[in-house]
Image (cartoon, rainbow, N blue to C red):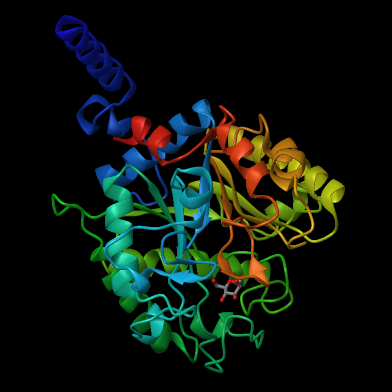
Length: 375
Ligand code: BMA
């Protein structure tokens, strides 16, 4: 018995070491990302995303550990909790956070998640081999309204614009937060940053109709310049339009290959299951084609079922047929805020049994499985 245990230990150790590669084993000089001064850990994240995509699709959830339906992290701060873990026994591999209101110097984001909690969870998730992605529902700098205040404001924050000073301060505040995300070795934790998302829709001040494609691209580049000026080098940049109607739709606002690391798209189930599956498949084919040119990772950066409580089999019947064999590195489901605004599942929710089936699929990867690649 003892002998068997020893042999198994050697075997397991070998298996673990052969599947994980450390920083020193990868030729980081060969990895080019948008930020030319990106940290080694950031390049490693890029490599890991490529590796994940070869193995399957990492499952992601927005604000997964901050709150869920009927609970908030603050209820029991000693425990890392997640609706997904409670339903399927496993934590998501990708954790989305939104840093909206960091620009104001506030202690809480726009959805009342404290930045202190966010930082702590990012550290814990990273420590366990998980991946962090960040969106930014930034306020409107001209009106001080929210992101959905579509008053044109892009021109005002570009170089020479009336709100440039404010914008520089906002990026400085964001930078301080990003640079404060340290791991246990005091290295800055790499993050997939997804700014200025869903720009082909008209609902955000940086979106279609509220700015020109040229100014949008300039906004992207100047954001990168300012982050560099503030010594931020832990970001991979993801470009995430909303559902695309065509390939050209992707190109209209695309800042250029040298400014983007990951190609994404946000698609919600607004118009029925069949239409959703079809649009996910078609959109991911577009991303695959675009990404293949430089071997960039691509992902379904936001998704969810908007037809709450109506479909028991949404996961295996509607989402999975859309993403199956698509080559995406991850799919991220939007937040579980309240019973009238949730995009994933939770204990007692109508699709929870089907979610367990979905979670068992070989292709769908959770934290433990991704950890074998990332740690
Ligand atoms: C939106 C909604 C909002 C939320 C925002 C940022 O899509 O969920 O309620 O404030 O994302 O998380």
